Image: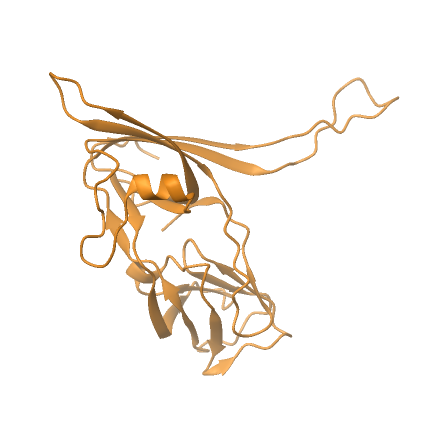
Length: 230
């Protein structure tokens, strides 16, 4: 992958969920993985019902279906026939640009707890553990800026005080790749120097949001706390 400048990067969060019915998906060519076709509707809200249909019929419990809420991806365990049409009823989260973002930093990590026992070989045994992330954002605004003036109130301060899950999307400069993750705002440092700009430094920690809101049995939420995608 070639080098990429940081300045074309764009930050987003999400607004009030909006219902979509019979939303089209696109087959990735395997006939088992389908993504919501409209890129603006791919962030699926975990707090609302999800229903998946094949050729207009709801999936049954016999078909194991996983929903990746971060990127609107439907995975069906048994491949369908070419030409089968998969649609989805759900709520999507519209994207809201955080226009004053000037820096973003990520720490993505996984725990590896020690599982070494007595009389083991002379090296530690590790068990694969939990995923997590931390993200820091530097913004040229205070935390009371409303990022959704047309439909509601979305502020960093409200999310911090209420412990509200907050989605951050970063369109990495010039690469066409998106980083998305649900987090909780842990810290907000506001700065107002007399000779500079008002700014805030926001820290989020990772949060997995798994949906139990499925209108039809046989659907499951993917355990994704953060992910890269398109």
